[in-house]
Length: 74
Image (cartoon, rainbow, N blue to C red; front, top):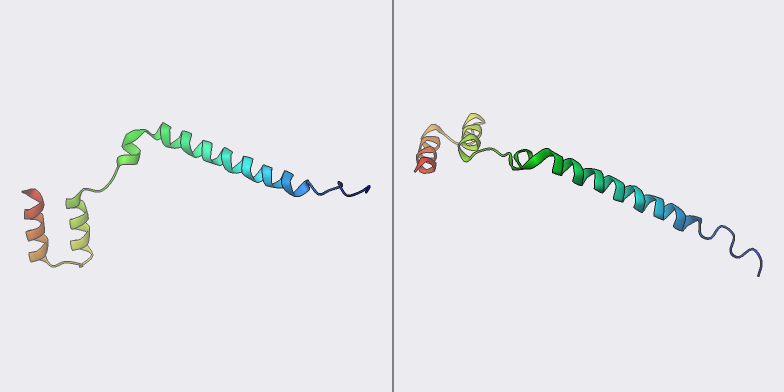
């Protein structure tokens, strides 16, 4: 039947554009992570720094802070 093959594939073309764009974004993200080096990815707060922040926020009292700090430094 004529006309059945018309625009039926337009949806697939749009899907491939979305997939291609997602792959491009993923590639840029991987390259950016690799260029940052291990120092950027491995950067984290030390246990002592986290403990200081908890004390500063009032989550723990002074006695608990000092006890936990001694435990960490052993």
